Length: 165
Image (spheres, rainbow, N blue to C red):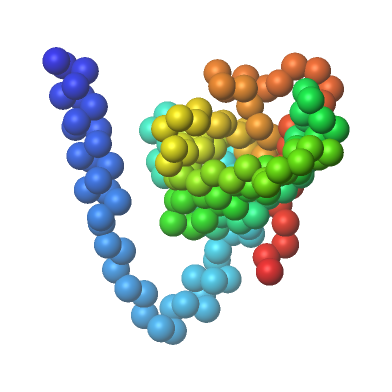
């Protein structure tokens, strides 16, 4: 019973925080704010964040298209494109090399967790498992196992950021 109340309290706090509106900035303050903004590479926390996470990860700034070829047990590789949208949704397309058939596509929502160190993909299809990716840098993420650990061996499970179209 206590766990359910605690979970409900946490969800309520998150919902209220998400609805909080920021005050509008004056028009002439915009250039100063842009000059003071950190470079894109600094949106990844350094690991010195407080235990609360303090909301220092900017999902909108991190959103983008990541692609690469992931290892495959039954084929030469899986050409993978993951699009992380600024609104917290995602779409992933996987094409198995040397295999017939249409590419596999999945969508859902993405969140950042583990002290801003990993991304969780929560598919809309509940017959699919969540997927985890470690945030290596602003320009690279690496697929993790279902328990959040890196894959063993020397195979490359990384996806690299692609330029915006």
